[in-house]
Image: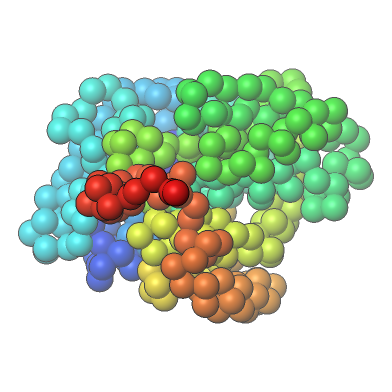
Length: 365
């Protein structure tokens, strides 16, 4: 079989109620659009789901990454869902659609995109992570643990085929540059960058032989729009097994509810809670931030699944810990570190407040 492409494209096209979930009618609109595309042979298979108020389109096809037909399909689907959202008076209808018309690629237009092209192996398990109320930098710590931390991924020690390590493609989203860093030999260099999650983000991870292992969305809405228009709510694709981390090693980082930016009004830090599909409905202070994990076996381009990978009592302690952390950090109110730093708040209401008060600042005597 020729190479297949797995594309995950998401957008916030309207929340139900507020920013907590998505109305079933929007899901039906998306399924109809993708079913029609499948009938015409544009996609091999698809799955429509949601995480919080984000509509998630998972598609397999043979057209490669950044294909205008696939991206156009996603854009048209989001536009149709937005029209349905407007009729239902859903909150923030179409807030991720930052442009008026499709221009060949949804990158830079608001929706988040993670894609990879690969030759299907004898067995092809993948896990697709989808998050709400956070930013793409939320994937940095889990991805490092999956592919570079032997205390998380036993295969880095036990499996000789993984001893060569991996190549991390890291983006500087402010300077619009990228760097390729090798692990384990450049692990410390890698950590220096990806620890700054607001600026440096892991885009792709490759085996040393060039085979792709993981792909993440890195679109930041504030960088595109120049103002706060909602949180980025990223997606991530990870291939598993056979010289790559095992499924359990890929899930393990989320047993630790690490702190991410986002939460209420995209202006706060909070713990990332791994939840089953039916709990992907952030409510408390519009959160805490959530992540779901959909497991698939890809079979000749078809999506066998999904399995709800976080619907397991082994993640109960992570959820309990997440609530404990949320209680603690929320008690800080409008003070840092609960509230984001000023550099990030420059995209929210801070500039308007500064402008209103600028005449009242006097030189210090």
